[in-house]
Length: 575
Image 1 (tube, rainbow, N blue to C red):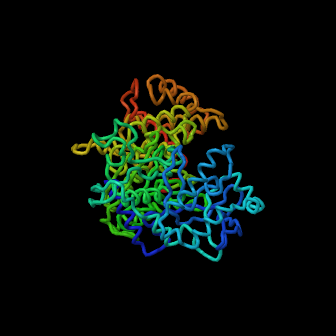
Image 2: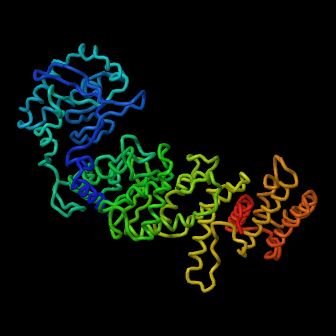
């Protein structure tokens, strides 16, 4: 199902009316080529063209369509008419002359293996002459040669006066896309056609934490993984035709590519989004989950407004409500890629579930807090020291699965949020949003068919909420407020000393705090003291007794009550 959806996405991009939006044709791939060796018809060196733009280490090379690269491991394998400087020119950049000689020889052998129709091409003849004479002094005198030696960049060839590279010429491209007559023919699991079966699938790159050279979704490299009778024939254990393999890997590499608007990083899961037809939800989903760029900080907020408008109206700016939408989460696993989650739904249903997620997160905030709360900011708020490296590895994927399938959030989110509140004695805006979302989803699913369900928590202070833990959190905030007004300029309040105990073992703390409260009220003006006394009475009206211990969900209610009451103290009220 996953590979079929990626195959359909490739075919969709191939039919695009915009040439810039199309994916490479079969047998080709887009590659950054920093340097191009320009030669004349006799193979004489003319120039070393630098295609990079930018400053310093942020230079970006121009991308070209080239024959698809071979899958490289620790052995020697050369690409057709493009590769690193070691392969193309035999430049020793690592102090290993024997291996460099093998690499350069392999590069030249690829040219000899081309059919006669390509061998006679004038540009290819010129390349062969260039390699035969290999005028290294002219190359070494070029101003860019120091960068070549230092970085071992990817290089290719261009005939003087041509716009296209030599490897892009029709004769060479036709030879690069030809099939192997000796390969196994079988039924492709994706298309159902009788075609050549691919033995080794191209690597998928861009998955965070995986090998930089790429990893695979489909691979067999051990007898334990191979079917009977297909030993050492790897790809035949999951027979997929060569064109279909090219299609799904090209589509996935495109979605995972640097700068893609259809991918985000959620914990250790690299997540991509796509639809069967062009749809604005493809990029909207990434903007909703991801952190907005510095040059456009309102992107997430704009996407959130567009999401609410789409759900309310049932219409999207681009695409239909019944377009099928796919979400794929990938995580590294040694040499392979593991599927962390996979969800398929209609666009409107997915948009409705996304809206429900943001409805659950909605909580009162201060003016400097962002309206749009990205998933990364949510995860970082419950991580130790707020660092991305400390985010629990499976938490991001579990939250996304809960959002996409409209399920309760994982218990690890509640545990992490409560633990950070206790450890830092602070209930921040993202943590309060996470706690409210977790509690409301839990209530909604626990009382789905109940006649008298528990009341869900409001975005702001709910004075009528009967939850004892919620009222205890409000009471703790009120007692802290009394202390702050009685002793302005305090470096530490009861929160710094008692928050952890008050939220877990209330009976051991609140009797002491209530005694101290009378001392603090005596320092306040009479009118203000009476006002705060009434507030304390209103909060405690629904408390029969102080519980000995609060379970983890109750500690979440305590934190949310504390946060709501604190925000209410600093919110201007209008009659």
